[in-house]
Image (cartoon, rainbow, N blue to C red; front, side, top):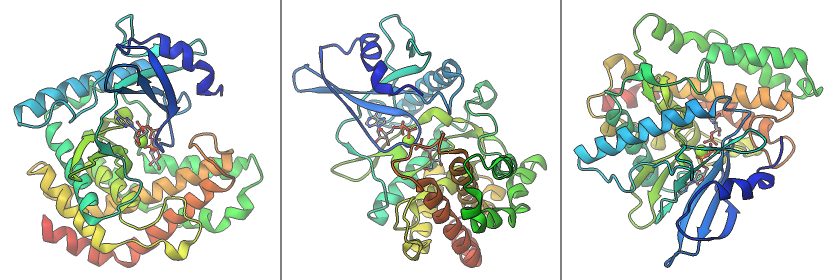
Length: 367
Ligand code: ADP
Ligand code: GN1
Ligand code: MG
């Protein structure tokens, strides 16, 4: 894939930043898009986020941006009506000079611009329980704000994104192909996933049976996808809306637990350090349910621990498949990083299984 830097200048030229651009630099720690902070000469300094959408992850940027424009317009109205912060409380799409929601560069990749949400921090781990709770409240509230959004009007930006059964099939294919001869060193992890084949169907079967409803969900609810006020620590804005589409609310809950309810980086090589923190699980559960108000059904509440386990298992399978395929999907900075990421997920799944009764009790306490 061509580097984003090669197309940066033509992309910058496609947008009107209101003042000359004085500097651009890579920004953030996302695994998917190429993200830049754009500084302008405007008095007081004014920054923007310029992103090249990953052409590997997102095959149809026009559909993706249509989703984001519609969702963010809706969120502005919903925030206004509920007395929320419609200035900083949602992303806003800045159009190109031609009035389009994104720019297509000469290599065919899509670029888009958002205002930089100032006065915020983006956390890579739950430094304090309060910060984690704030993210839970924000993602719960995201559910509530979008509960009446017509889900059927959204495009599926990544087909079968949280189809855990299909993710396992893809892993099996990657193992079979073993394109880089890496499968032998991952035998334990592959077996770990294969032993949980039946689990992969639990939420999907509940959906097929009509027990769990489809809703508009975020689908990528990592702690670093919500910006926190740098002074108060309160959540300001849910970002990374690329995967907002019909899905299961238990997955939104679960992906946050997967990433945030422990004290390690996702790629921590020392597994001794990787442990599910039940205290953080509880703090997040309470905050998420509070933020969601009366949105969730009883069945959704009951299945929340499954959301945590399945998102962790699924993400582990995705990291492993990507490792076997040569690290083509997730950004990596070092060899073996995707395998380390997979291993932390296996460790967390095993922890969840060991503490299953406690997870259920905690959820029951806040239902
Ligand atoms: P990815 O899909 O690669 O994770 P994100 O949309 O999450 O891309 O952006 C990557 C990072 O850029 C975020 O984690 C955050 O640090 C930063 N970021 C994204 N949008 C904004 C914004 N509007 N204001 C400030 N920071 C942002
Ligand atoms: C990616 O885009 P980012 O970095 O917020 C990925 C998620 C994974 C996550 C693992 C579109 O999230 O699904 O859970 O990495 N996003 C996409 O850290 O695939
Ligand atoms: Mg992100």
